[in-house]
Image (cartoon, rainbow, N blue to C red; front, side, top):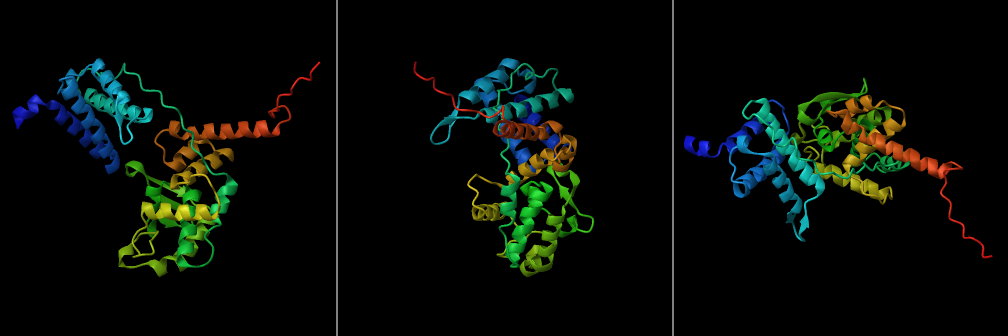
Length: 324
């Protein structure tokens, strides 16, 4: 086994990096699995195409060749090339791996430093307007347990800007309705306190009083949001189904996902004058650069408002010249 490892040290190097991400960085299982897939593909390419089985022997042209291979490879049915964002994400994983080895002094140089990141077109989030949000939130009507739950789910998604994974992981004890706050466990098991507005507090309070007790079973345990079938914790799929149903009832034609409410939450906060650093903390973003994409959305909104409303900004039809 020792001789095999000496012939292929790259496998051990990758595993040490994955252990670091798990133990020291505390990344989620899904994120670790994504790194594992990317690096397995990278290691396979190096072994097959470049005859390299040790990260210390990787050179810049090896990494560039890997990026070029991904960019030219077609997959799926029908066959189509990988998206630029997929190639950029793979390079980011490879770069993190080599930078880790440099920090650990296992290698002397990072061969990814001179490899250009593919230019990824920036896709701006597409938030709902305030009116559209209000129409969706008004859809669950009545005092039936499912209606009370749906209203609470929608109000918390929008009122606290949660990721769907954060929403379905909530327990009853994570709420402080009197204080108006909610404890959230975000990416990397990082905890944050998020304010909960009046509408969300009222919706959750009504659900706890008249909705959850009717749904609860032994399977519920401490889970906040439950499904109707067996009272177990609401799933991602269940939450997405709730949203699709009420978006349809609100007659909104655009595609709306659970994350759309998070986009709308951030955009509306910034449009209302909130500081980007505050919004960063509320969203649980590790870097403010992630949050700043929403400032571009609000700037685009301002441009649209200007061109539609300002007398000198309106786009006019070109006038045809009169014939002489």
